[in-house]
Length: 166
Ligand SMILES: CC(C)(COP(=O)(O)OP(=O)(O)OC[C@H]1O[C@@H](n2cnc3c(N)ncnc32)[C@H](O)[C@@H]1OP(=O)(O)O)[C@@H](O)C(=O)NCCC(=O)NCCS
Image (cartoon, helix red, strand yellow):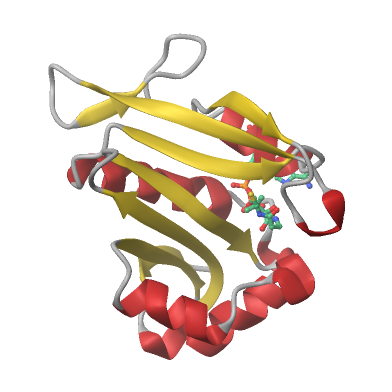
């Protein structure tokens, strides 16, 4: 199976809404919200495709004044999870944020979401604060952040907790 990451287009909307439903139930993004994020919001929407079919999505919004971007959502269709697509989508968000001149990336994740937390922690994110009852039904969230330090070589490269660089 050939998997690639591309920028999302309007044509992806039905598939992206479905992925959101599969991953987050009724809390998934609406068509309208995704359309806005693809066509008008400051940032980028990336799609993971398997044999041409959209199977994963990451929404990265940039905040120019703060010089930071935010991972608004990340979802991989349940049938395609555990194959490295989440990590590849996240790498795209790093590359995009660096190229857009951002100095950090932030996100929120349910404290109970161990898979997503592991993915973020091993990609260099640290917990900034805990947000009690941040989500619907009272679930707590961690706010996480990674700094994108300037590199002497090229672009901006984040540091992992063990000192390695992505
Ligand atoms: C979180 C999510 C995006 C990760 O995407 P994915 O494609 O499954 O993740 P990857 O295959 O890239 O794996 C990322 C890491 O998580 C680990 N992982 C993946 N699935 C796992 C599982 N079921 N149990 C334990 N670890 C798991 C992988 O081993 C990998 O770590 P490694 O590289 O150190 O081995 C995906 O599980 C998902 O869509 N979940 C539902 C929606 C969600 O929770 N989104 C995040 C909201 S903040």
